[in-house]
Amino acid sequence: MKVRFLSSVIFVLNNKKLVLFFYYTFAKNKYMLQSMTGYGKASVDFEDKTITIEIRSLNSKGLDASLRMPSLYREKEIELRTELAKLFERGKVDVSVSVDYRSEQPSTQINVPLAEAYYNQLKELATKVHEPNANLLELVMRMPDVTKSATSTLTEKEYKQFLETFKKAAEGVISFRKTEGKSLITEFTKRTDLLLSYLEKIEVTDPLRIEKIKTRIHKNIAEFVAAENIDKNRFEQELIYYLEKIDVTEEKTRLRTHIKHFIDTAKELAGGRKLNFIAQEMGREVNTIGSKANDADIQQLVVLMKDEIEKIKEQTLNVL
Image: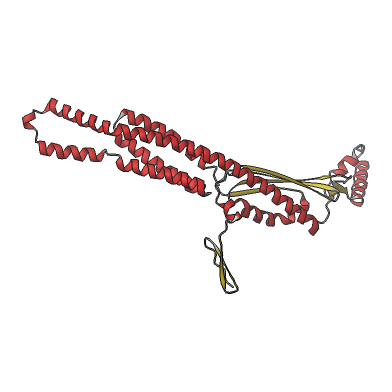
């Protein structure tokens, strides 16, 4: 039986179609805006030791994973990196694993036969060259392969406990990221609301700007050219052409559209790159308004808008 996943799942049972609408937990997690900043920690008691796993994540262009853990778990590093790629997608992720033994557990072992051989050779050498041999044991302990880590074999049971703890720590990071994501949405909403308020002020100021420009042009023409020498039809054509060149209606419309698109995307998708791109488009429209405006009041509003867009762009760098 084939099941097609669209917005619902159709189960065929006794030749009847039962349509079940559902909401994917995985999809909900994936498409909820998340920050790349996160922290998670989990511990488990296994036999005579406590395994503690800490995971930290910061913003990064791609996935940059770093694992610090005892040599006992090194054989599973590739598998753990694969899990990290599935869970986090992007970010600088640092994983730290520590093991605390509840019973006496030597961290190193001494290769006694090799140490004795080194000692005897050093003692014989010291006698031949007539040098004191009081610190021979200290020298022996520095020789290659005299000490080695006291590691045991990783069992399937222990690794299962380790992996469950690893996933719990990862869940903590994801939960942290979601909480930070909600804060980012609040921040984006605040900044875009300010942009819209500045845009509304520009829309109020714009007609006044046009009238001021027309008045100034008429005044300047009147100062240098006699009224009877002005071709009114040609003057009106040139004036309309100039006003069209400095008209910002299209830019205002596009900016409003970009702002709506940005906030809708922030609420629905976890796409930091897309949000950053939309913010750049918002910046282009604001720059164009500033270059066309030729008005001090609008220029002041443009400066304020640019400041808000820079703050938005900075925050998008931390979105997953």
